[in-house]
Length: 521
Image 1 (cartoon, helix red, strand yellow):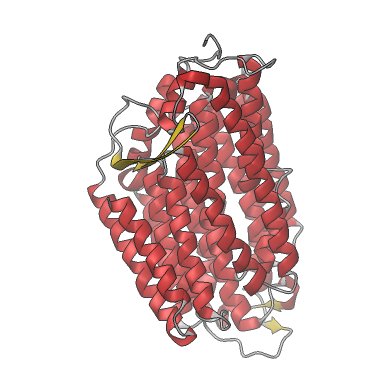
Image 2: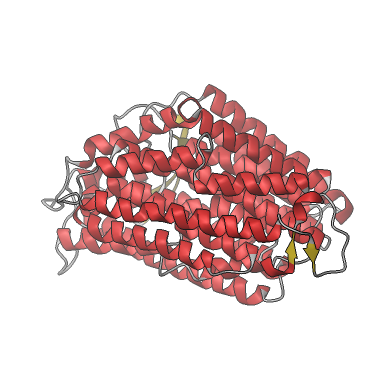
């Protein structure tokens, strides 16, 4: 019942904070957010999962609980939650980033604070639910539940174009959910009488067993392909992959910076997590058959995202577009279909969550002090903001893959897995990986350019505010994230990678078993 306890703490805390007087909300929300963090750390310490949550018989799921709920037509909808080595790190990432984002909100948020912090805690519950749910209906409720607080957090507390950005975010992600929903239920209806539940492990098992049948005039093989790409597009918008990325820069630029921390740190991981769970676990044959297309999308996202970042003047847009590039590496690791590729992709979700969180937090601190994010409006801040400068440099090096940092470990795992991959004949994956690696060079280029222009060189500032170091409550998130990034990069196996491998190895082991669909009734 520990997952239920996590959800209850977040939801009850959100309700309490929402109705508190504004002056009590910041500290109350921080105190409440530390409770889920403590519970998740305890869960990590006692975690004993050994298999993949969607593959029956591969091992055990940690903290699993199931209860009958309701029936809709022939389908039973049950409360089913549990964690494996893929979802446990992401739950921990969520509970770590939320209190840090709350701390980072103390300076910029000074209006309707109770509602702001209440929505943040509500969103934390939805995020934990997405990573823990094992029944599709429960998962979909949490998936959509994330959209509501994010819409208001951007639309109410955002920048001058906040309404446009919030509506664009909501339309993109809501339409994507509909496309995904159609694709998934195409599979469910195609499974026919072999499935009487929306339990995700049961559906994954039936698909892997080749029980998918024709749906009307659509044969099982075509149905599997159509469903795969419907879900790929639906989840790809959330990642986001090129060309569905255009909502992301607007959302980041207009959102309050602490919300950008959560958006890049956790929300984008919902898309890659869902791709892993649904596309690459339930339909491994289609994923491998169309590996060329998926790998091409990944490489384009890496290079195009990096090039767009290179062309920006706004620090927030630079970090936002770099997220598009980094998420391309995750897709590349997944499509490689190797132990290191899958493991590296999952590890990159956590590593990028911490590094992008650090970068957005730094941009937020700089904006709080200078009231500008434009690179050309400031230079030489290092002497007056040494701690923030050090944090920005650490984040930039993390993005660039400096050894002993989380980004290096994640990308190293992905590249090893991609070069080992044989899903594309004639060394096609190795060639695409080589091209994608140029993204690191571009990343290093634009981050060094931004650092040199804003932090170093002679001091120059086109504004009326006193340039000083950040407040202590702004510095704490920066230092905490640096420690976590270095720890994850120095001891990747001890902290997460071994745990992740236990969960993804069953997917790899069974990936080659079922390459064809159909044959069902």
